[in-house]
Image (cartoon, rainbow, N blue to C red; front, side):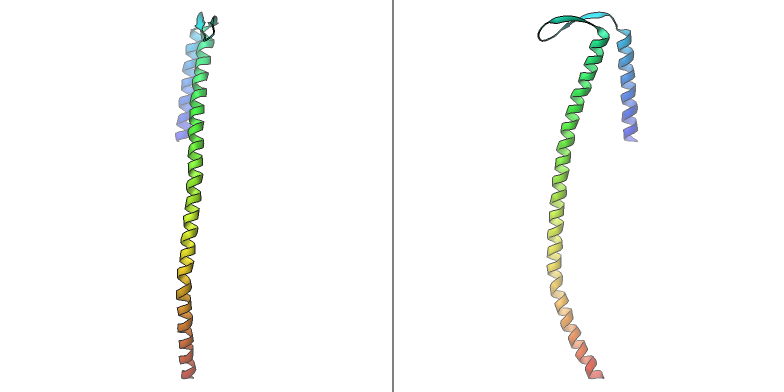
Length: 115
């Protein structure tokens, strides 16, 4: 549901930008870092919106990759701790098994006495 809401809001935003851009088609003076020029306002609006989308996408990508790296690190730490727990559990289980074998031989002796 969250993905659908995001897509719907993005489409509404794109529609609003498109309508706003189409209404404003007059040429305007644009001041660049290295000079000035004239361009239709529709291009200025669309290029500005696309640059905003690009900056937002880059920021989101950086966050995504940081979270992905953290997730991978946490999964590796979890696997290591699980392996350590399994090894310690296996070591703990060796002693009771030996005790049970000793008990089994005693009960075997009692069975032979019964016969």
